Length: 310
Length: 309
Image (cartoon, rainbow over all chains, first blue to last red):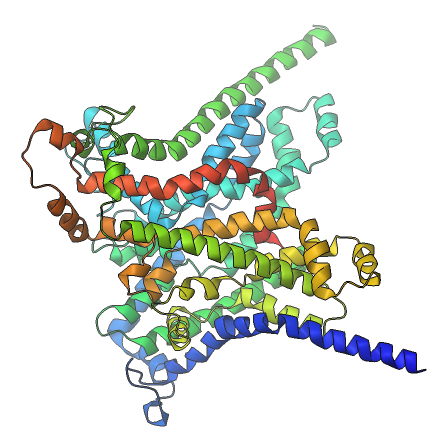
């Protein structure tokens, strides 16, 4: 009897002790992931950085109304939304590219060559956006490789200012994104392709299927579920372009087209007088829409595939 | 026409289209590889070529008049060695802590005996899906004393739910009998972790370490938001300044070269271009050097992004 009691006691003590082991880390999570949410109250105050907020600075939904009532602000927001939708839209529209990239890469029979291509195209994924920008700056500057070669070939008479222009900003940003990510994104598809049953392909070959037929009828249908998940994840993060890429590439010439929501939220807080409450209000709205998109995409996934991705 | 002849004809036709696809894929992928590699090659050959030639964009295919002055000069640029030290320091400290925390929490979340295990696991995992926004985050970090403080690079980054989930999944695949045996022999929770689990889950820790290290090395935004003190700038941030603020480079160049315009001097004198290119190469090189080693972790690594919470 006593023995059993002691064992229960021991178990309880151990379970509490184990909790104490992880407690410091839980506190870190609370401080660094949950505590920033408390900052959302700044969206409801007239907050000017050195002065603390109080009941007197409380303004309710003033800043939320400001977004839709101030004409210049409305214009700004619409412009930023247009950019966000354009950049995310282009990415979504071309989300098949890594899949096709993987499919045809897999068709290369010479293994060393395939490995080489894979290595080369994955490398850009591991450098930062600052480095991507530095590369862009050096290769596309007026004395960079691209302009020099184009001039030597006589295709252009004077250097093109690639980075200091507002032409095709959305598409060029997509190109940089693809340059950086496509090889990496293809790896997931390559893994999926590796999982296809060899016998199915052999059987198709015996029946006289051409390579294109095998690709269309076997390879691509087999990896469509992976593609579907990627598309759903893209939809879920439609508003979250991140700011780093656009921050490093932005300048006075392309600002009109490059400012996406994430960058805008940063810019209005840091430029000029610095509007913290407005920036926070937009962050909140963005979060709400993002959560809805995530839930929606997950719901669609559940409906079609029978399981979600959260 | 016999059946055989028909079959042969079809076979020839098929192999012709197959051959065409073959040739096309080889060419197209060669182009892809070139586009991805050439920029790196371009920067490297330019950083070791005569500076007056690279300034005019004359170095395209191979290095010309090779010299390494650019690299020697870097050590003398004010702030640059400090930034390098800062980058290395945050990478080493940040990676070590990220990995050990992911391993420990991943393991602890598999312990059935842990009080309210599921609740705490969700408490950590759900943080993947929300984000307060730049400004609320910044204000919180300021309150916590993370601005202008080296730990601002570390504390906000070391608890990564993705990695913890990955470790948890890996720990779950380790036979329970292994832990039970150790516990019967009198090992406590921590002892089991350090002596039994840690060695067993090494493969997944290697994957996490590499991805955490690359992330730390590449981090830029936290410097931008949190750090005003120049001593805390990282290489990424300094490089960004060199590109975007021409004035920061001019000061360095004018202080270095008050000499005559002799050709030999021109070839090695620092220019804005030479400094930018050389620094870029220096920041890229560590990633390129460890790159071959972590290629085999790729498939595992991409699963980090695809794992189910």
